Amino acid sequence: MERLELPAIRSIIQTEQFGSWFAEFSGLQARRAMLQEELKELNLTRKRMLFEGGHWREEADEVLLESSSLRAQVDNLEADGARAEAEAYRVLMRYENKRAEVTELWERIGVVELRVDDYKDEATRNRIQRKIQPELNRLRDSYRTGSEAKELLWEEHEKLWIRSAEASLTGPEVTIRADRLEARYATLVTEADRYRAQAEGLLEQVNELREDLQAVEQALETLKTSANEHFNCLCHREFLYWLAGDDRDLVYLVPLIDNRDDYNIEVRARQLYQCGAEDGVSRLAPVANDSDDAEDMTRLREIFEGLVEAL
Image 1 (cartoon, rainbow, N blue to C red):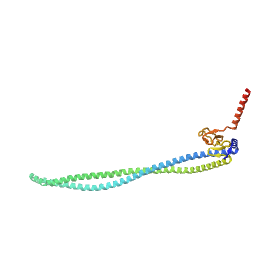
Image 2 (image 1 turned 90 degrees about the vertical axis):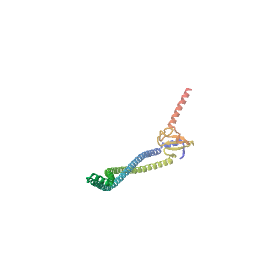
Image 3 (image 1 turned 120 degrees about the vertical axis):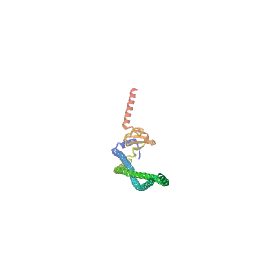
Image 4 (image 1 turned 60 degrees about the horizontal axis):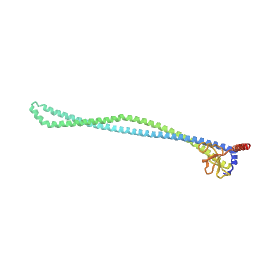
């Protein structure tokens, strides 16, 4: 980078070599912008695919967890139903034994009562009645207690059979729900794998675009180096800079792209601007063209001649 006078800078940017360099640089910049946008869109799409795949995988895991819980519930129902059925048989046996015991007591009570009725003489019946009354009361108490125990055993037996029946009835329904969830799980896993496969496919495209973008960046760096060497300037990302030969605080620069928004004035690519060495591009000003200077001189000459004629 060297200090150059304004005419020398104008001469450089008007050469065919500069025009070719600028066209190639602009084309590469446009190519870089296009690749960056494509890469941004692909990365966004890939992230969306990964998110979708992760979402469906999480939902699949939740469904699998629920189906596993239902399978465990089926196992518990079957085990509980089997226990209830086995216990019901045991209680039924106890019930049958108690029923036989109560029936025997009933028969013994009947026999005792018939023995009293066999006597024709009332006095004898009363005497016998008083004699056997304690035994009769004991038998009746045993019968009542046995009947109550028998009824309790039957109620317990019924509850156990109901519990066994409930397990038998609800188990198949829960099994069907588990089957349905497992089918849903398989569908969700397939969906998650599909999104992940798409994301993997996009990754290949992303890597290809990154390689293309890297090649463009390298080509731009090569052009920047070439500009620095051949045009005696500093080539940065958006401007070419020249230190003014006649003013240490003045810098001339040429934008490499149009920009209406970021600077204090609108800048046009390949036009000449100036700025202070301290301020840099934060405060830009246009450089008048040679034709503008000639027009100003012509206008001043016309004004001067008009004043002379008036005198």
